[in-house]
Image (cartoon, rainbow, N blue to C red; front, side, top):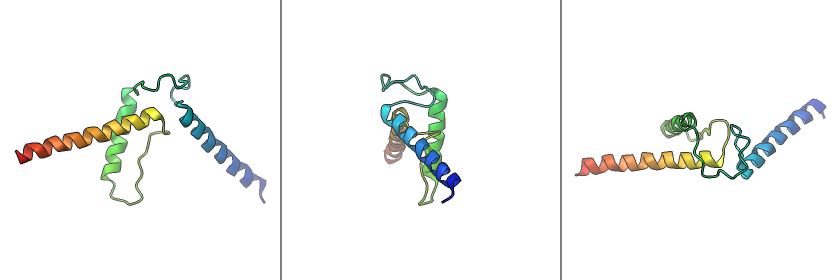
Length: 102
């Protein structure tokens, strides 16, 4: 067994585990000072813009293998923001349909 391959595999595993711990503890790469106390804090506008573009790309991708890019990692704040983005899209679609029906 090649030691370099083992080291490479272990480094990838460590990174995955660190990302998982950061996610579960509520920490964000962009704000490492967040100790979970600001669970309801909002994301910066540029981050919301990036997520909105990612959601739009996801919606328009017809591939069965498409996935939603959470822009440099998943955090609880990003999950909440994406949820709100999807909700806004659905509600705006309903408004358009109601205008067309009436």
